[in-house]
Length: 460
Image (cartoon, rainbow, N blue to C red; front, side):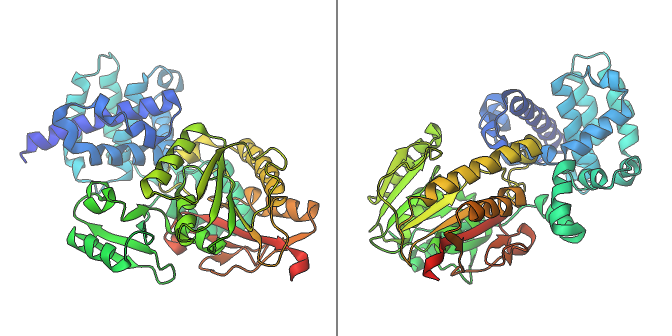
């Protein structure tokens, strides 16, 4: 490519990324859903830069608190409030590229790209903003910003791009050393894992097909139906193996939960918060599609996705029910095993969903904690009373308010239950409940999960 072609792509990518971020903020949708607007904001000539736009959008939002502080430090507060949304988001993107990703090859276009961008911005003060910011950023270091912050937790939040309240909660439970490792890991990309469709295909067949398609994988040492993607020549969704349902893109932690539930053929299973269906279809696969799984959720659109997955995999044992499990004792019958992968803050998923950390606060987590207890209390009443029956409570959250606090409240109000030993343990024991386990991104190379196995006391 010629230099001017690279520059044009760079400028177009910034503009498209800015529009997508603006859409995400205005419509209050997830970044994943916002990226679906890419065709609308880009021209046919720009389509080849999708991956670049995706990276700009996700990384800019990941570090948006740092960019916001720089903008407000360099531009008077009353002036900053008048900056149009599209200009503010261009500033955020440029700050990410120049300050937070200095090794980026696009930095060679910094001065030129600013000038070209200014031509498309019909603002009298925009040239002044870019000029001052350009001179400042060329000499800027993160330490300059951190030196202006006295609060230790707030300083950590800015240094590692996390909300201050979240840093405080993590510090209180995990201590400084582990908290720092969590924060660092949340800003890194995690490996991609595949859950092999062993219900329809032989393991060797799937691995051979992946190899033929240029995908290098590494088998998981514990989970026989999970592999880690080391490299791929073509994006996975474009491969024939993906389109032919040889595997399902699912995190290692998510796959582990189904194995811990360990469904057997013929057992009645309740998946209490099942949509969009990744774990549900896994449970059916582990049963050889020879069980009876009731999959409930109260989210209509996500339940449609679950039904679509059932049809794609042609599973007969799953029975979807659109229902709110907060209602006491939904079903008269009981179940041999129950999975409650409860709605949560997603604090363990910030690596792949950086927007989530800016959407939640402590009040929302408290609300979620109450919801989680209500769900756990209700579904526990539907567990068959025998030695082989148990339920799994899990969240993709690392916050004790959604995990240990919920379990403690449940065990206090329902003394007939206790925590049980899990059949698979690859995570770290909870400091409060040693029989529970927690997966950390920096240790387990997967999203953060908290997993608890609960059964009746009388069957010790």
